[in-house]
Amino acid sequence: MRLLVKIGSNLIQTPEGDIDLSFLSKLARDIKALKQEGDEVLIVSSGAVLCGTKKLGIKERPKDLVLKQALAGVGQAYLMHIYDVVFSNYGLIPAQVLLTSDVFREKAKFYNSKNAIEQMLKLGVVPVINENDTVAVSELVFGDNDFLALHTAFMMDVELLVILSTAGGLRDEKDQIIHFVDDVDKAFSFVKGVNSEFGTGGMFSKLTATKMALNLGIHVIITGKEDSLVNLKRFETSGTYFKPLDKPLKQRKKTIAMMEEPKGVLYIDCGAYRALKEGKSLLPAGIVKIGGIFKRGDTVSICLEDGRLIGKGKVNFSSEELMRVMRKKGHDVKAILKTNKEEAIHRDNLVVF
Image (cartoon, rainbow, N blue to C red; front, top):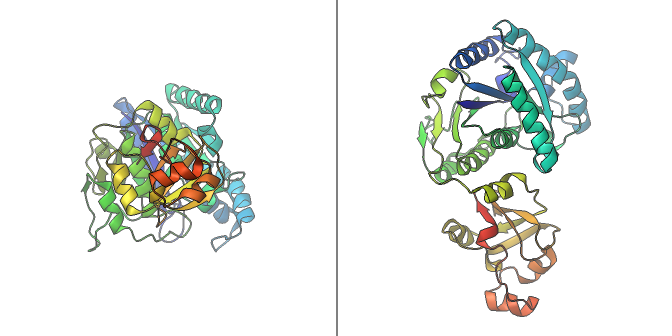
């Protein structure tokens, strides 16, 4: 089995604020055991900014973006040094991989990166992947590597995505961990959305990435760092296991979902969302707001009014045209735009997560 383990910033440190060498040692032991069984493990690790603050003795979480980028440059070297020292004790060789979002948008970069990481796995090393925080902005502001882990899992044909979290899993209204989820949409009702000290994500980000992974046919487990990777490989967890869809997306729609850069955002109402889940096209009548500037044929994200990402698709109309016909019915759309089309996005060009 090929597994990807995503580690958030606050998993790297102890409650006292020190680097958690005990956890990293346990992680190395688990990876060694899996490799002996013939499994392959990739790591997506946050922590560059955290390690930079440790190295320079900065006590408070930095807020300035440029300072974060500078700290990431210092911290990434320290972070990899820690991985190298700890993993070497267990006969493991870590390899640093720094990616930026354009890798997943440009075909040549995508396959060059994929081939390089595949070669690392053939050499028996453990890829430790992070976004290139010194030059990238999005990971420092949104998501805390949850989506980098998702895109990497897609690129590397991962079977199981393990997202380690301080929450230990998805928790219900009584703060008890929900151990099995087969309908991820219902899981969003339990999200509290509290960010961690050095991370910028939260359970909302993790569930959004999880929902997309399930559509790709990838198993997902959200759990705490006490869980054993050996047990997780068998889908045995003290956290939350999410079952993938029985019929994952076809390759063309996977490409739209994972490799097409969205040029804008369409915000839709609940009625339109229900229609999309039934396999129907997105009509202008269901659009309540438009973000960004895009032209016909561009890919856009589709969100609910609360900002939850629920899909992507290629638009039949530009942002200017959709501004004129949003909330209008089909015959009005055809009359106003002088067209035979009435769908904002046809279902054949639409991915619903």
